[in-house]
Image 1 (tube, rainbow, N blue to C red):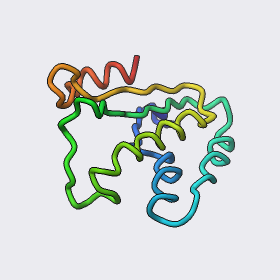
Image 2 (cartoon, rainbow, N blue to C red; image 1 turned 45 degrees about the vertical axis):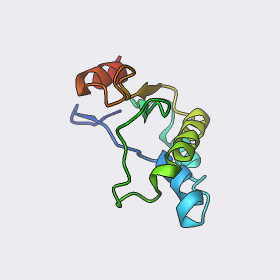
Image 3 (cartoon, rainbow, N blue to C red; image 1 turned 90 degrees about the vertical axis):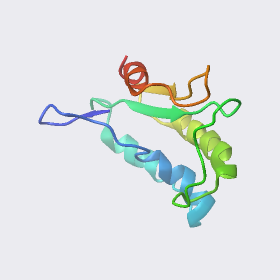
Image 4 (cartoon, one colour; image 1 turned 180 degrees about the vertical axis):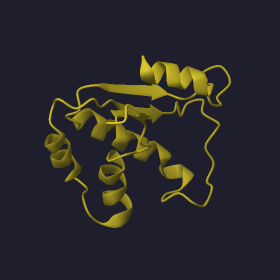
Length: 119
């Protein structure tokens, strides 16, 4: 989450970590440059890195929509790579939030996810 000069809170979905994940899998380059971009931000920026994950043991909410880079079979590897990239990030304020409702296998409510992401 980034606090803009206007005071607005902004959330970027798959912001920069997508480069580290998708570039080697689908684009033919490493995407490692994003870590140097993080360092250029410095430590005094109001920024929270939020990674949304799913529980593949019970998840029933992602289907191959034909618009993604990979297939539904690639989702677990992509998530593993996102978690690895998240763990390598130099951003100090970080949260991993699982979006899977562990009882039903679908999505948790938007309010539950947002509350956990912002807490």
